[in-house]
Amino acid sequence: MIPIQTQGIEPKYDSGLLRILACDVGVRVTGYAVMEGTTPLYTGNIINIKGRYTSTSVPDKLKHLISSLDIIYNKWSINDFVTSEPSGIQWKVPALDALEASLELWSQEREIKRHRYDSRSVRKFFTGRPNSSAIEMTHEVMLRSNLLGQQKSEKEWEAIAVGLYHFQIHNTR
Image (cartoon, rainbow, N blue to C red; front, side, top):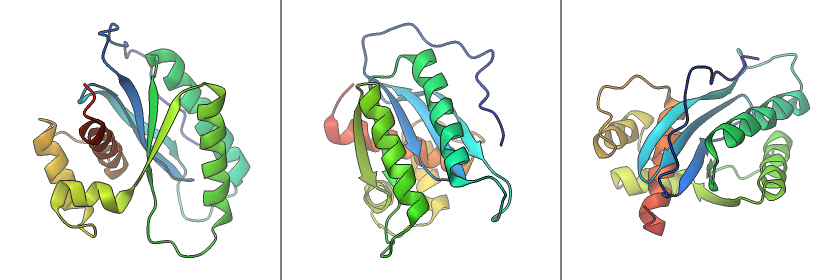
């Protein structure tokens, strides 16, 4: 597992705006963005397990995710927790169920409101099509967030997208 990197990154002052932690969650890789208003303050990857089959168990991956979320929560004084949920899965996936339960418990223990959005709805908001490609959505997110040309992973762009989507539908700035 790759540890979360936050060294040298200073949280912004408290501007009075809503500060959210937006995540594109996954058992192996989770992208995140700390956002204030509609501005991404910091983005990164929380879990990055190499390869499809690893010896790291799902509970160990989830422990790493939760401890990483705690670091971000404590450093940035998060008000709300926003997640992009997988869509189109029509069967039971035990690892995703465990992930969902862990995230729900984490937000309840910290008394922060959790907002979940279907990834297809987020993509449709940005591109007009729910099945648009990651590249198409990334381009739209870059344009809307004035981050054209920034180098970020697909998971980071998905996290920024769900954060922007949340601010748009709740019209919170």
